[in-house]
Length: 149
Image 1 (cartoon, one colour):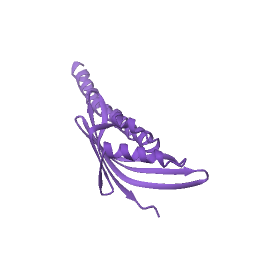
Image 2 (tube, helix red, strand yellow):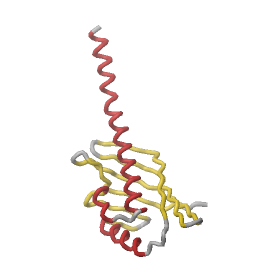
Image 3 (cartoon, helix red, strand yellow):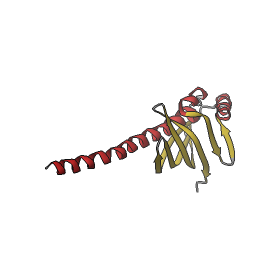
Image 4 (tube, helix red, strand yellow):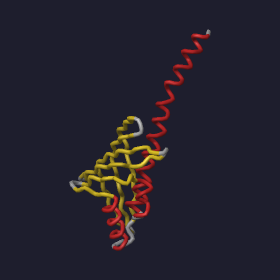
């Protein structure tokens, strides 16, 4: 009986890391969603440090962007804002974790709306997120535009 109890207990504890991975994967998915909503849709440069590590880089369609590049983009985008609304959605299809690092691949979809006009954009992206002091942040992103037919 004691042996059976020990085997069942061993099986339960082996599932806990997987549950933690699932929870952390969801946290990182939300991190991606929230960062796009705050930074790329709402153009809030002040939110960058909330979502990105200090040394974050974005490989954006052949260019290297840093947090400063993104902050400057936010400022310029606010100045030229004509009332466009960007709605972000994601299809996460691959995730891996090693220690305090998660890598994810996903499709990024943006719908740009103004009045009755609508434009749809798509990217194939991957991110690396790291967990430091119990907080997940994006360390790197790679983004490639996808032509929509």
